[in-house]
Image 1 (cartoon, rainbow, N blue to C red):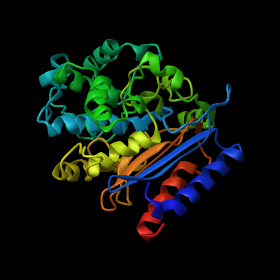
Image 2 (image 1 turned 60 degrees about the vertical axis):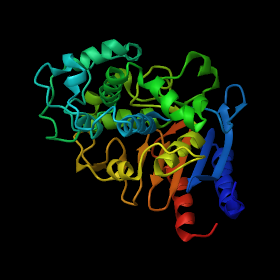
Image 3 (image 1 turned 90 degrees about the horizontal axis):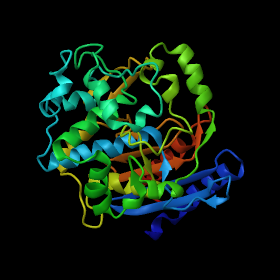
Image 4 (image 1 turned 120 degrees about the vertical axis):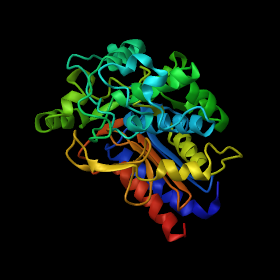
Length: 364
């Protein structure tokens, strides 16, 4: 690892050691790549506080919607190979989806949360999430809330099946398998980058703890009238629902693996580049900016990723984990935690900012 960034690594290490020793965090991983080379890889604390198992660099951590970035990346890798087109009408490959006048909805609409299908039945359970065919049948039979492209609404859960079933219909493989074979495998991180986690890898996962996320969602449910439509009470993101079901709206990862993935979107990483520079420009550009129906705030999306005002694109998950890329800087940053927090000052965002600002300054 580049010695020039030793002071930055020390600063990150001090920050995460303090977060853990203060009891604010249980376990944390932070990683960054610059121009395809790792400059930060630090971890601290425990993967499982009940057993004392340490958080290691390769421990997979369920990072909630940070996983949407994995799913989006699969789509772009397939598009790069000519297997997918963003303007593909979903019903062309998934005929049952055309019911209730949904034949005009495209993959682009799904990627940008403008498909008009953000809602789930109020009685949806975590057990339902383990049945891929059931959830896809439910979406195929759903009536859109509005015409495609008419309104932006965060498709918190439905996004995963909309995009994932398109991938399955086109490739004949579940999107978890495509991720493993076409993204994680070439990058050498097969055991650290997951949508649905294989049974054999479950004992390796970090144990999630709630540190305010559940309370925040309960409060939000009472104050945001559309929240329960997209995340009914039985399937709110929390410390019990993640990691096991194959739901490509969420994902499980190590910080170093997801930072490596984003680095391979920007350019070569050990000879592996996932998409062309031209496609990178397409997927990271602003595709839609509007007030979100769920949260009532203006949000900005590219093709599957959030686009931030600091020039980055990526995804963040409920509870605080995140992974972003800065194309102009050649930088990628990821920070994951196993204590799902809310209202705690967003320490993972602070770590992202620390690394970004150091790189902008141009000196370790």
